[in-house]
Image (tube, rainbow, N blue to C red; front, side):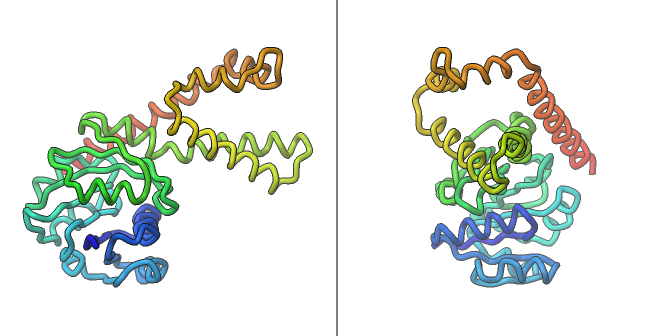
Length: 258
């Protein structure tokens, strides 16, 4: 069992705690100053605490707090070189964290699907230990990238779930407008996104080939795809990703200037 601490039990921290509990390979300590936040995860960890120093007694320490308080948390953490600190704060560079701890620093950008074991995460660090790779495998899929690519990764997989929810909602509403019950429309839309994503992950074909496989000549799908191909939807999605990437870079500049 890997001794793991999660400092910060907000949306992302609690998702990681619940995902690690589901995997069953980790002994988790949850740390937060908010008693309600600790109460929400008490069934999914070995212990809860408001004491950051108590959370430091772990092989892997995950800092899952808002970017503007990362520095204050790191000031209270006394970690050794043999420990690993995972930072998930958007826009907070590895250099910033490394300057404030003796631990091995790995930066990750996960997303909320960690709770169900379906997380997508980007990982950057000079030394990513096997225990971190195992931890990430337990809660989803991950890609190891360069630190310089973290802003775009933050936009794609960190902010990406909200963009997918938006598109899913649009499909659901179209189903309702066509006469489907709201619950049925949501089930069909959500399962369609889930199945399509699994197909991409498991297939050796690229996405364009998968689209072609669904588009029978003179069929229903190609009629809908013609509308999408002739629209600006791809450019709009790219603009959303770019806006999120630029905000991540802005946050990085703010933290580095502290």
